[in-house]
Amino acid sequence: MPRVSPERLHLRRREILTGARTCFARFGYEGATVRRLEDEIGLSRGAIFHHFKDKDSLFLAVAEDDAVQMADTVARHGLVQVMRDLAAESDSNVITGWLGSQLEVSRRLRTDAAFAKAWEDRKHAISRATRDRLARQRDAGILRTDVRIEVLAQFLELAYDGLITHLAMGADDSGLSEVLDLVEAAVRRPTATPHDDNVG
Image (cartoon, rainbow, N blue to C red):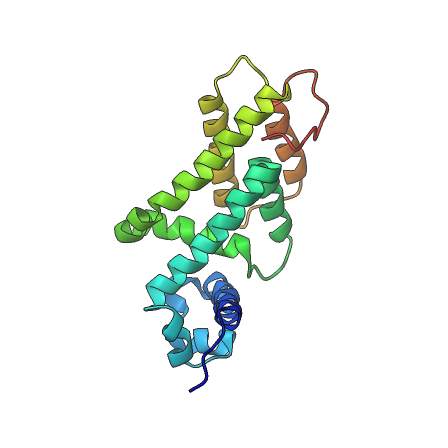
């Protein structure tokens, strides 16, 4: 049997994660049956579970992949940009991407203790990225200096959690951009200009 190159294995894994993300976002964890996963991904269960032990490890891999992307976005552009990206995705009639994954992660964190424990490290990576970015921005003179970094980070994380809850409820999202401008302004140094280095 010919050996499969690492590049091909990586591409196949990405293909599985992309299809699984859409399936989990559309149907939720419980509703994403193996049959639906096969249909969405376009591969047999044998091919899917050759790369992932079971459905739970596949969901965790999707969530972890999203967390890595989120931490990277936070590090480069700030948590407010992550919130803007999620709000923009909510404009779609069918939520199939990052937002859908975040909504399902949020639900499982409340209902599945084993998942919440497994998720702990990923959550810390995002928190570290947020705090590191805030410290860099404070050093650059962009952030307010009268509030501790830890408090600013918690404020942004609460805003993020509130946004996820708001979007999960399907509430009216008109005006969200202005709300996020207000969140951004709340952490900015008074003399910094709006969207100065994507604050937060």
